[in-house]
Image (cartoon, rainbow over all chains, first blue to last red; front, side, top):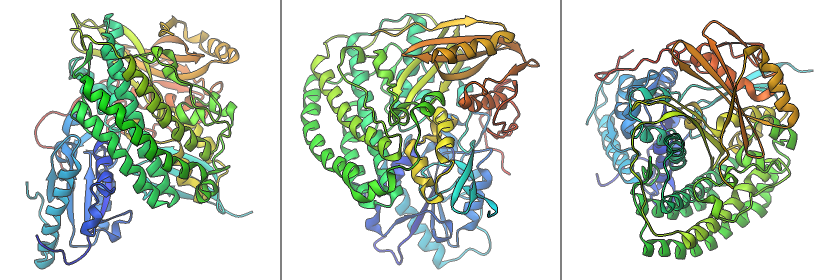
Length: 151
Length: 359
Length: 126
């Protein structure tokens, strides 16, 4: 990917992460990693967001919240699951209150590995998501996107 | 008299990196009552003791919270060691102290940044987080992990810090201290910060003590509780004074954290000067049988790990009482009577760590 | 300074309120409450601290016994009592702030009383 046609805005939500990945997502915004150089801005409003970055797995109480946030985002949109908890449930996958990875509620486009995920891989994941976003914009999927995504 | 309305705050809110939900009962712009509800991050990780053997559970304990992960792991190990009567080598205790203080510096800088962001001072957020990266570099160099270190184990620590690295760390602290002084000056003197924090969210000394506030939330109200004074790890051999402010407002809590970073720098210097040579771990023999409360001072306050073993590889119970949980009742008190616009600042002023709180 | 050994006293449920009041009078602060399931009974620990002296009261109850709330003495105790009620199903009576089982909203009721674990394999959808 050599250029972006727009500045993608990201919405970050902490599903049931331990904070490790959250603070690394925030660290991406800080001067050392500085994702703003790609034109990426962290927004608090789902209606302004193009990329949903989720850390942590789904639990019984936040499944509605995650679904709600996803539904409020305008199309085209991409979802990045950051860290192993968001990908599969991670070390907490056996806990009674954890449902599993993000992909059991909403379709995920990019999975970022790591516990906690490193800022470098988070940036890689988001940049990867941006090219998927471009593609989705060119070829809008009819109706709702299918479950599952690129691993 | 106007009608009362209820405004929901969270779970997804721009100033909160983590979800907490508050129902704010308002009369005009004033908060009459705040009702917290939690559970968005509840995983139930304490039940995992039945699935993981006691040495493995360190990893789960560390992942209670990604910000103060090292101290969680250490407190859990301390508890198991006490039940098993393990004598941890001196060098390991000093290493734990050093890593704890680096964790505190990184946590406080993180909080200072978020606090600046909540006030709307984005430049200061960036400055704090840039400086925080130098602390994370040290943690990464010495443990291998930036935020989750995994360097503590039952019986000691997993890695040693070589002498020359330690010297280098102490040398780098000079530059760090100089840079932090600049930021500290802004936090303590800047007019706009003072305007947003002075007299906001006041917690009296009596309330702080009796409602069970801990950490900077308590020390900002003049309650000098600092568990490091009990002398766990190597703190017994180090001279320091708990940082105490008396005003009890958001400014005082912020000032406590700013000053604690300086005190952490000093503790690391002392520990590096006093650290003895020697082994860094002992092999645990047998299984824990008995119960113990292990307490430590986290960046957010007093942390209690309760462990109970029955002589098998699996513990019967691990209970983690985190500082944020006990700071919730004081928070509810602080919010009653404040302006709606001050709610984010007050909520942040207790340094809420929801991942910790709900476990 | 060395770490003070925890001092735990096992008491009868009926003496709980009186003992907690004594602690309050002596100026102890409440550190925490927690519950442990041992066999079919539940041990409830009340921890207090004064100048780093750590004291514990322990009562042993079964799942049906009503436990008096200490939130009248220590206002902040409601958070632990609600937690205990939600996770273990302990019946605490007389709490000053009663969430009615909604502090921890879990899919399974009283999950810590009989812990279950999600197995491996695919996660259940909606």
